[in-house]
Length: 226
Image 1 (cartoon, rainbow, N blue to C red):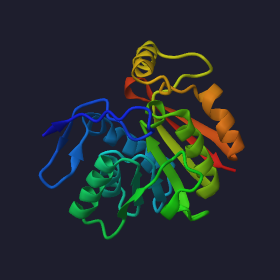
Image 2 (cartoon, rainbow, N blue to C red):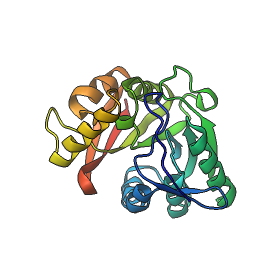
Image 3 (tube, rainbow, N blue to C red):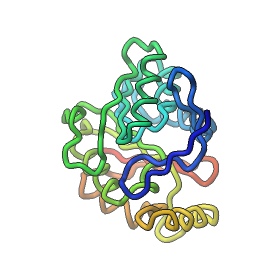
């Protein structure tokens, strides 16, 4: 069954594509299907093999299941805000047998000052967030960085995936995407890494360490806790 999610300015996860739902409840995203392998290659290189990772806005759950299957010592925890995504993530954890290395989901509002069950200071080696910050109010972006600064272990990494502008420069396709997002909701938009995100990183004691070019004018952006 194909479904479209469109929730608006509430800050909940939003799908900009049709998604399929299997009979067992696992959902499938065309974009996750396309990008999960290339993202996995970068994570395998940039994260410790035994990293304990919190994923914020886990969506269908495909990313976490794929990464844990590919990296046999990785531990991954799902989280999200909306019930549709949480149900899919729960179906992935029930379906896959990874000896407890794939866990959750946890209900988490990134814009909140308290992330509930995941509030374990210094316990997360990495926080991963893909394709959220451009389809969420900026308060969720602020909360994501604050939460990473609060909960990452020393030298822990915040890893973002998606489209970005750089100090006012933006790829033509990303500019069109930005404009279409703002038409849907004025609080959305492709974020500027230098102008929007670096000030948040500085406040959270996170240092930009690498920007990796990815297909379709996307990037993986890696911050490290200082």
